[in-house]
Amino acid sequence: MAEHEQDDQQSEFDLRWADRAEHKEPSARARMLAARWKHNPPGPVPFRADPEHVGSRRRSPWISTAVVLGCVAAVIVLLGYIDFRAPY
Image 1 (cartoon, rainbow, N blue to C red):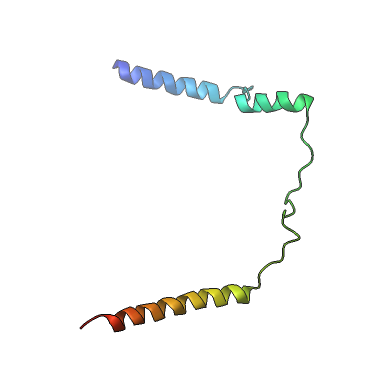
Image 2 (spheres, rainbow, N blue to C red):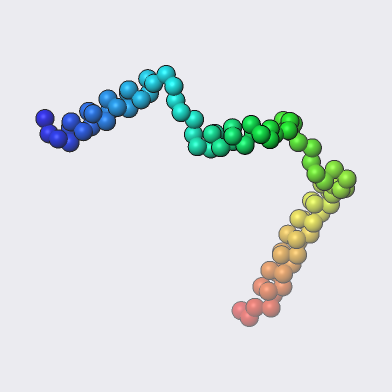
């Protein structure tokens, strides 16, 4: 067998051996967070946090629709004006 094939078989064996390991070491980030939370645990966090801008008034969807339609109408008028002014 070629040396390359032996390396492939050896690395495949090593991966299978590592996957069957009973204990897997946590990642560096997991270890860091565990150490940090040991002395200063995080507070409870709701599944869906309340929006921060509860007091602000929402704009009506009709106003947004009117603004969009107004912009479209302005573009149509502008294009018509440019076409009207263009020499033939």
